[in-house]
Image 1 (cartoon, helix red, strand yellow):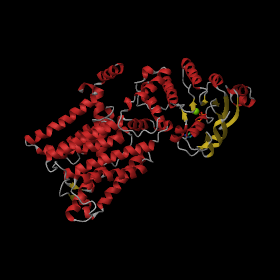
Image 2 (cartoon, each protein chain N blue to C red):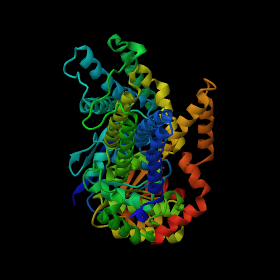
Image 3 (cartoon, chains in turn yellow, blue):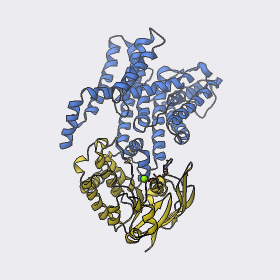
Image 4 (cartoon, each protein chain N blue to C red):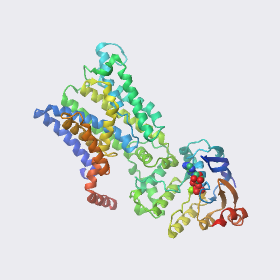
Amino acid sequence: MSSILEMKDLRKSYGGVTATDGVSLSVEKNILHAIIGPNGAGKTTLISLLSGAVKPDGGKIFFAGKDITSQPAYSRAKVGISRSYQITSLIMSMSVLDNVALAIQARSGHSFKFIKPAKSLTKIRSEALNILKQIGLADRAEDLTSNLSHGEHRLVEIAIALASNAQCMMLDEPMAGLGPEESVRMIAFIKQLKGSRTILLIEHDMDAVFALADTISVLVYGKIIATGSPDEIRNNEAVRHAYLGEE
Amino acid sequence: MFGTLSRSSKLTLLALLVLAILPPIFIWTGNSFYVDLATRLVILAIAAVSLNLILGYGGMISFGHAAYLGIGAYAVGIPAHHELYGGFEAIASFGGFTHIFLAVGISALFALITGAICLRTKGVYFIMITMAFAQMLYYLLVSLDEYGADDGLVIDARSEFPLINLDNSLQLYFVCLASLAAAMLIVRTVVHSRFGMVLQGAKGNEERMTSLGYNVYAYRLVAYVISGAMCGFAGALLGNFTTFISPEMMAWSRSGELMFMVILGGVATTLGPLLGSAAFIIIEEAFSSYTIYWHLPFGLMLMAVVLYTNGGIMGMKFKWRSPSAEKGTQENGTK
Ligand SMILES: Nc1ncnc2c1ncn2[C@@H]1O[C@H](COP(=O)(O)OP(=O)(O)O)[C@@H](O)[C@H]1O
Ligand SMILES: [Mg+2]
């Protein structure tokens, strides 16, 4: 198996806090690679470094063999990296359908198109609606996003990730704040995404992680302390001590 | 066909219709002063419509938009000045198309250059730096003795067009009104396009739009240029209307007034900027003859509107009517 995403000695500090402390990690193509670790371990920071939202203090990032360390965030999406947010980050002032449609529109070249009404583009609109149907939000499509519940917002996050159809999806705690029923739906959904693309999953829910992941890395205080199969991680002494044991 | 239009489109058409009917009546009833007032209103409304594109839909709070009114007016005055008194052969002309080309072209260029810099900043820095660029232009013109420095310059002849005579106040008025309708239509079309969706998306959540792959900076810059060019056109009309140019046209207080009009009328609506300009003109007219502090009632009204409505005069109306308005959207949704 070949790796698609490579991190080499990534570093990032916020003032005195070292959020990413020399992370080197290789993510293989078309697998689900989970990153677990206690709160404040630097998981979200790592995703932000990979998506380009945050610039590293040092180190390099390679995607499909190309050095993307200095590529701006918007162009990383173009090469096939997308992310979802732990803290819901949607366009609240637009409809749910518009949020998803914008993700599809982003895939189809530039948007310096000034004349045709966006809402008349049936191809984009119906694809967006299909995704909302899959995720069970079709009846909310025309609603203002700010009017949706927290659980629904989490689902819209995933709908957008789906719509971006990226080669490499980074999901930041998609299950955060979901009820048990919604969690089950979300797990089934992520299962469905597996196989045809690379997924970097950050998740707190251990049952979900062990059910979904092909490979797991454990991040503690900005450092990767172990990487391996779910069984290896479960039985790793250092991990049990540093993380699993705490629970 | 009228039935397929949204309620806000109908209101906009109604407002434009009223604006088309009133001035001829003013003339027939011997109140030609009100035609002048209506012309000023319509020209300021075009400027406000252009500002609304970046401020209302794009979330870019420009405090330097009057610069484009000034550029547009000087693009009429300077060529006319040279045509009359010689010098600067390259641009000396009474020709209206030359004036408009210069007004729109130089405004677009000014917007491109200053926007490229301003849009690197955010929040209050953006507000300050847009104002700083406008002030730079202001002081540049104050320093140009050839064009009257801070006293300004009388434009001796209006722009010449085939078939149209801008010296006729009613003809000038209808040129302005047609321009307003066109400006509203352009902004409306642009904001509903894919480009407009990106612009509004970036206002709502810049980080999300970036991570989706949109180069937010580039989209904003293009909107900024469109807006500046459009306001430059309004400036050319203003120059023809006042037949007088002075740096005062682009003073920061003028930019502030444009912002007030947009916010008072209701940001990100088609009709809002026109309503805001109308409110401004009416208040100015009603109070400025009694007191030099006429900005005070305007400011108080703005505060009231911002505090007690959700989105200017337009928002006020919709708030009053909200039960039926909500029902309306639900009906549309189920259709
Ligand atoms: N923008 C920021 N400014 C300052 N400190 C930050 C910022 N983002 C993260 N941190 C700090 O970096 C550390 C890692 O945070 P984060 O990546 O969010 O962890 P996790 O997602 O694993 O919970 C924390 O100590 C956090 O307080
Ligand atoms: Mg986190």
